[in-house]
Image (cartoon, rainbow, N blue to C red):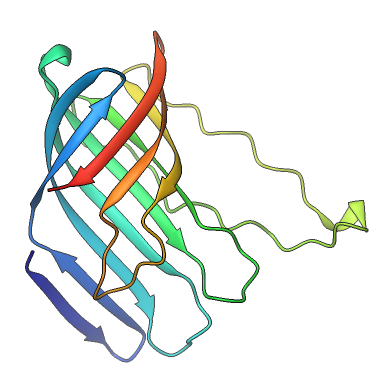
Length: 168
């Protein structure tokens, strides 16, 4: 996998791969994706989380048409107290999924219930999209070692089940 690394004004280090093949399993349906990985880490601070974004197109024969894949993963800095988090969408049709980076949990003190903000409601997805809830992915990751697998569940308007994405 070819990786391009750029340092932009000392603000961030960004690495982006050329499109690579990924094997996707949605329920009992297997397909292939071609996707790019982009990894960003602020250069100025060593205690800031690394974010990976994966975007591409998938072909799952059972679904007929190609699907757009958009996922994000947050690799927390060691000792930050933040848990790794990842999620995404798989949509029929256009690529405008408008899914942003995963939200970093707000720090709170368990003994003080007023310090923990309520979780925001999940975004409402168009009917043509399936939500991907990632429960296991390759962490830790960084610019030299991008994530290579994601496992979790999918939730579509008509069905739900297990989801897996593995780089070949």
